[in-house]
Amino acid sequence: MARIPLLVTRKRAGPRVAVILILLCSAPTLAAGAALDLYGLVDARLQLMKDVAAYKWHHGLAIEDQDREAVVLDRAVAEALQHGLTTTSSRRLFAAQIEAAKAIQRHWFDVWRDGAAPPDAPDLEHELRPELLRLGDAIVAAAADIREPLHAAAFADAVMVPGLDRQNRDALFDALDRLERYPHRLAQVLNSGVLRIGTTGDYAPFSYRRESDAVPTGIDIDLGRDLATALGVQARFVATSWPDLMADLAAGRFDIGMSGISRTLQRQRQAFLSPPYYVGGKTAIARCDRVADFDSLDAIDQPGVTVVVNPGGTNERFVDLHIHRAEKRLHADNRTIFDEIAAGRADVMITDRVEVELQAGRYARLCAAMDDNLTYQEKAYLLPQDPVWQAFVATWLDLALADGTVARVFRDHGVEPRPR
Image (tube, rainbow, N blue to C red; front, side):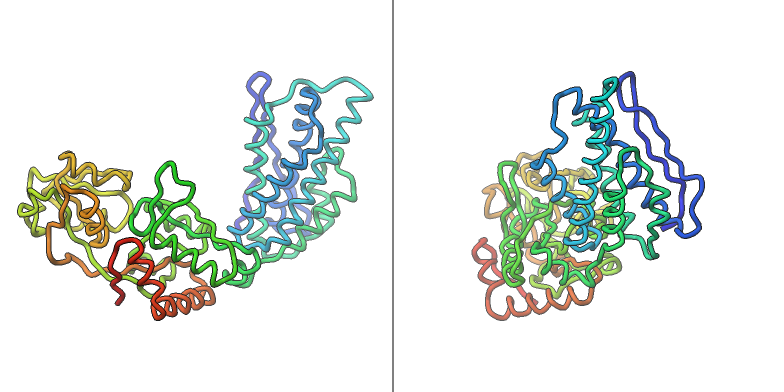
């Protein structure tokens, strides 16, 4: 991580949060730049505790709120998983931060009890907590990037917050120094007890979620639960989108992408892909009374034809590559995109045959426009570039294909399985 000046900003507009710029102008020789940046973030977060204490003082709130602490701790541990930090070591770190924060707040309560009350404080819910969360996330990211020894003396020089006693400061440094990373994603999933499954929720029959649904449904949702069962862990579904799919994977927001994802060389350059579990291709869907007008790619790519497409995935890339004369119209919600064709607001959509077959069965006015596919396409699962994790998922999938689990799940959702 490159060394940059650390600027921590707090805003005040009238009684709002004051602008405080904490600039690390000099560094002890024992600590390298990345460690100093980390120490500065820890210091900046603890500096906010005076304002937190002032808000609680004026509003008669207790310093300790165990329910709130549990929420903060669980969120912090989940954030740390995105960076591969072990749950035990990250929980220890944020528990130490919480104890240090309470010690500082108690210090200021003692000061104000013996003297003048503090000035008005920034709003805890809308100003302080968002900044605390931002700094907490930044601490996790910075700690995960550290590849150098940490030094207690440098930490003590950098973290000098009024009210922070030596015991809590030492405990906080010890927790930072004992942070551990998982050796691979399989170990992380098994140890954390959670399989985080990235899914778009907009692509039936693989993954579909209405606004009223607590969790998505679909082929990949059922198979995701099967994978979690095979691992002996809980399945947790993480919302993503086609434009953000690869960025979310790179950021560590999920362990596996399961959403009817197509195998492409572009994705393979940035990630690993499982063996295919379904083979199909792109084809066209239109109103049944007009399928004869769109029975070839050339027939579709004509002036006056409106091709509707969902942004960010292989559908849009195919349209951009092959459609030049027809009008391309983006429709961001893949859950309602077929309504546009049925209602006559668009003429045709090019998408995966499995989706065409499903939607043609759901809409009486919609039909597949072609007998053949325009492309060859394989569906697979998206994985980080982790060979140990990839090998486990591949073995699970091979067995699920061989014992009929995949075929059964496809048929449960009204789709005929088409493995390679």
